[in-house]
Image (cartoon, rainbow, N blue to C red; front, side, top):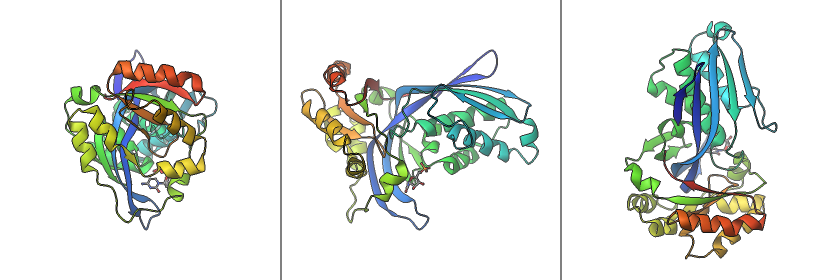
Length: 301
Ligand code: C5P
């Protein structure tokens, strides 16, 4: 994420993520699933502006009228979680006005809500002068949602547990910035809970190491062959229209894309391109098919 000071408050650019690999290792007693996933941030951002006051009110406005702006929005949940951490009297004094401009589609598997929540934690910790220790901020992030801690550590990490145990990968920024992708966001979403509910964990999970090695090699063809997402067939059963998106990416062929995959629990798909030109070519061919919003993105901070 990128934080910039404003005359009053701060502006934060909160990135989306792609899952280059996602395996489900099993179902846990708490109802969640044990995951192993490789996530990378991309240059598609929501924009938040936050200003602190002493009103005791947390007020969120959003340019997307389809999104809730009350306690069910992860931004408000993050602000309230952080404020509760500041002590019982904090809710009488610590207030914030937050404006959210959405560019990352919801229910797309791109982590938009989670990234907005991580941005809110970091920004309000600063504006409210709380100085929450980094480890505690990560714990709070994990309570808000499984993907939130990743965005405190992005741009590239292996995430385990529910997704909240983040191991950043120490890669040269140029390595990941070399990867371009074409993003397709269909007009239908998939609820994360539904995707997990429809899944039977595999007897023999796919290993994550080959995809990490492929990413390190900065070889897009090699990475393209290793893309994997256990949730993709489940999401395609829930929303059969998603099969058309996969077919359209497949039809572009290996001369344009090195591979393609659904991100997270869907419904967004991405095609991995070896350079910007290939991604632009893919975008021009996909743009007319009416399968969803098409956009060229780059990996990295
Ligand atoms: O943590 P988050 O709020 O993103 O999860 C949404 C839902 O997705 C959970 O309530 C759960 O049903 C499912 N989930 C899961 N295993 C995970 C992450 C999410 O079953 N590791």
